[in-house]
Structures are given as C-alpha cells and as structure tokens.
Image 1: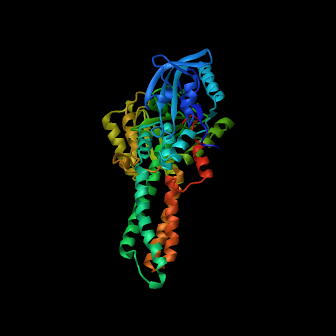
Image 2: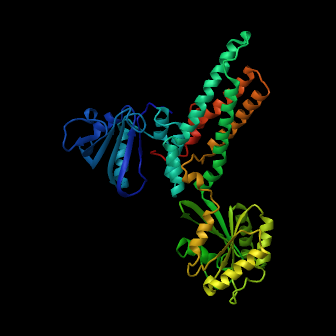
Image 3: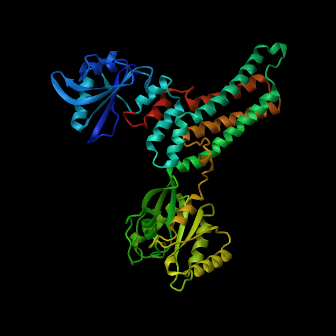
Length: 470
C-alpha cells in the first residue's frame, strides 16, 4: 500500500441523512479539492487559505453543480493524519455522496482502506499504536465505563505509563551494555541495588496492569448474566422489567420460552448482557429439551447466574427450590450466584424479613439474596445494585489505567516474564551479557504496545478492524 497517495472515504455512516462528511488526506488533498470547489464569498483558492478554516461554496464537476457544501481545511502537520486534510460536508443523499467520491477518484484520489486515516496518523507520529487502537474502542464504546477507558487511553494515559517504564529500563540497559564494552576492566556502571529496586517496581506495575484486564475485559464486552429457574417462575417477566419493554413472551403456560433471548442494558455505566433461558425441568418435548440444553450452555458462558424462584401464596419458598439452588452451586462453584425470589408484592415486609432469615440460616454459602416483583418492578433497583457488586469499579473511579485490549494483555504478560528473568538473574549474580538479553526482550514487548516495535502484519491486523473513513 502506498501511503503517499491521496485517499478519500465517507467519514459518516452510509445511507441517507441530514449531512454526510467526505474526508480526503494526502499531499494532493487541497489541490484536488481546489479543482472542484467554487467559493461563494472568496475568489481565493483553498491552497492559500489558512488552516482550520471552513468555506461555503459549490462542488462542481465541470459546469455541473453537484451540491452546496462546506469545506473544512486542515493543513499539515496540524491535522488528524499529520497530512493535508480536507473534509467536505454535503447533503446526506447517497446519490450526492457517490457523485462527490467518484469525482475525487477521477481527480486522482484512491479509496481509503479500513482505518487508513488513523494508520497514517500513527505513521506520522500523531498517535502511538495504543492510542490508535483506543480510537476504535471509542467508536465501539456503548456504555459510560467503556467510553471512559477508551478516552483515557486515547489521551495517552496507558502509553505514558509504559513509556516511562521503558525509558527507565532503557537507561539501565545502556549502562549494562556499556559494561560489556569494558568487560576486561571488570567494572560496573549500573548500580545493582538501584537496578533491582527498579525491576521490582516495574514488576509491580506490570502485575497491576495485567490484573486490571479482568475488569477491563468485562467493561469492554459486557457481563453475561444467565436468568435461570423452573418454568413459569417469572424469568421472562424479569427480563422485560429490566429492559423496560415487552422483549420476551410471557404467558401462564409453563415452557413458553424454548430458546434463549438476549439483550443488553447499561447499569451504572457497565454493560450487562441478560440471557433469558428455557425453564429447567424434566420434559418429553423435543424442542423444549433442546432449549433446556441451551440453558446449561449459557450458564457455562455466564459470569453471573440469577436463579429465580417464585414464592407460594402463603409466603413460603417453593418446594424443591433449595435443592435446585444447591445443584447449581455444586455444578458451578466458581460462578457468581444471585438467588431472586419473585412476587414479593404478595408479601408483607415482616414476611420478607422472616424468609430472608430462614433462607440465610439454611444456605450460609449463598451471600446474595434478592426479593423482587417482576410484575410491579418492586425491588428491581436493589437487584441492579446487587449486579454492580460483582464488578470492581474502584480502579475506574480512581481513574487508574485499565487494560481492555487482548494484544496489550499478551505483551504485558511476556514483558513480565522477561522482567522476572532479569530479577532472577540479579538475585543469582548473572553476568551482564546474559542480563542484557532478557532486558532487550522486555524492551521489545514494551515497544510492541506503543508501536516503537511494529511490522506490516501487526499493523494490518490492527487497522483491518477499523471502519473505513477513520
């Protein structure tokens, strides 16, 4: 791919809309736009206009007027890509969009590939690689927490932390390498005590970043929550209450839900993906049996299992509930479990407190018990609060760096492995030349994160996941 070409792409979603933005970037971007643009107020060409200015006029294909447009001008190096950039805001007709893009292609542009504008920003030093990846995460963010993490990473929070560690390690690496040049004199330029303290501090930071991936991955991808229980206990009604819409069919007939129904909502800025499953029971119905099999598959995939059970009209726990809860607890001991008793609207406060006490005494290993009325919405807010309890949002509240990218996570693990080797080498008095090998490898993995070490295959894999026009 020739990154000296001038590229063009639609920067807004395809389809009809109020406006559309078509973006050009490259050495000839302003010249090509000039050849097609006729200003309303000024006779000056775009090439002599100041950067970061907007110009009203007409886009012309010879004598034919395509549209009245606004042209935004960003001259290098003060642009997103670091090149000359022109953005044409036109009316959002798909026909107009295509006419303008085809006109620019005839004038010498080529179509941009996925993520090529951001790739050029990286290649021109406007962003490092982790910041560039954060651009894609920001576009994909669908809840407050994911947005907050992507913004922090795009502003360079993660990059600066890694860059600082890399610089300190590089300084000591230089001293170790210097020692190799004076091997015959048997001198030490790198203070081993200070170096060991640095290595221990780097290891602590790496472990903290690696541990943050558990939270970051949950925030980025959402938390899968399986709603399970016997047929006709209110699973679908609970899903509808959470989503505030009639998403699942509700009826008095047991076994109404025969397949899984999924939907996602944001609670406290965190995405939760709720899965309404088929009721668990013995059945001869072939279709219902397939649904029940899927229920257990979804429990395997879920991070939180919500077991819902109705209360009897007399205000007692339904027969067999405790046995079923114990079965789930034994089969999935590592799953977070919330036991939800439905139809609390039929009970008094005194009855609810008595039931809580009875249940807790008989099931001391189950910490989270909730009473709700899926029908009236009573207790649903408290249930949502209980779900948030399973997400450690402390790091998010403190604005700490949180890792959400699997590539970064893998590089950090490898860097920590090399740092542990360096630490072991220092403890055992390993020679400088062997220490230098492990240090160089750790520096390599740090560089992989920010893009100081990269290759075409790596860049291709990363930017292929971007949308065209960004």
